[in-house]
Amino acid sequence: VQLQASGGGLVQPGGSLRLSCAASGFTLRYYAIGWLRQAPGKEREGVACISSSDDDGSTYVVDSVKGRFTVSRDNGNNTVYLQMNNLKFEDTAVYFCATDGIAGSTCPIVYRYWGQGTLVTVSS
Image (tube, rainbow, N blue to C red; front, side, top):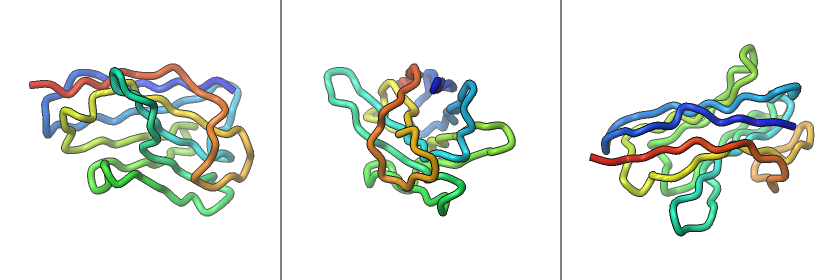
């Protein structure tokens, strides 16, 4: 399982970014996919999760980003997105996508496979 997060960058407070999670040789629709982040000096934390499309496809976001972040899928492009709006300084972190690798799983999950992260910097 190889996952790759992309789409990070430098954005001003209040701005938006859309992160993408792509996979090689792995069909994302069958698996729950989560987004996690790690800020400098802090532990990695889960941010959002989307259940397998073969389950109910339900989504989950943590309270700190609720109303600002949305997780979604494009099964045709084998991609999972994290749309981040109204970004704040405290959203600065390296963002990762990950999965448990279990077909049909429902969020929350225990992450076993991680991709390389993408850096999001919120700064004025």
